[in-house]
Length: 308
Image 1 (cartoon, rainbow, N blue to C red):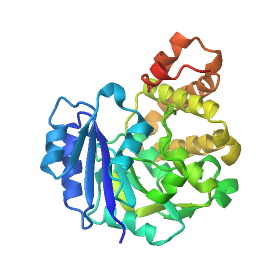
Image 2: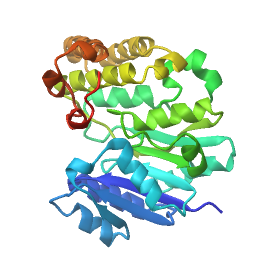
Image 3: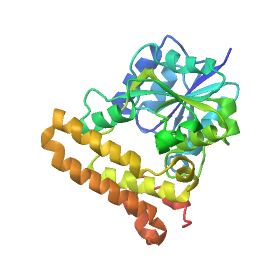
């Protein structure tokens, strides 16, 4: 039998964290170990986790790193074979969500699995559509052979609700510690290159969405451009991001025509900012060093990563 660990990085989780803990507590499958890595919360986040039976590791906010912190969690639960990751604002939607996700590892070819993300009940139209587009109702198993069809979406998965086979994650070198974002996707891409398969499990759902401002969208896509420039093998192996982006824009406009037509002008501006941010991120080597943190969503990255 596989031992299962649940790992959640936290920082000031707020009311949504209480919802997330209640949903975990109601799962039909309870993990063998539950771990929170807390970045110095100054609310009750860590105490609530302890009350729910979590082990809690405390780090400083400066120590947090998307990849390194999750790898620290993996190393801490070294006796567990399946590592389930959540974010503090992801609320498991049904009592069997963990069971549905973990059941995929009965297939020995599955290296990682990720669940469906549904919008929070208070999500706006942009956040709701993004979840509908990226997390369809049909499950699918992806392999490197799907790169021709899916392109950069082949290694797509999200650590907001994902699970990894420890052996596959180790073979892929663990989570990268030097990337600005998408540590989950890079681990998945390396798994795919080594012959593992990635399962998308629509039956395993969590509520998780963001309503980004226009500036946040620009900064997020700037960071994606930086990622694709500093990790060029991703696009070489799986194809460019622009094709996927075009499909998203068409889908979003169709969604807004049906649900919130008055937001279509904002959508045009929003997508123009995303594209501008992405192109600027791709050209970051030519930008002044001092400017980059102001353009970026992940500002702390620039304190330690100065090359290019």
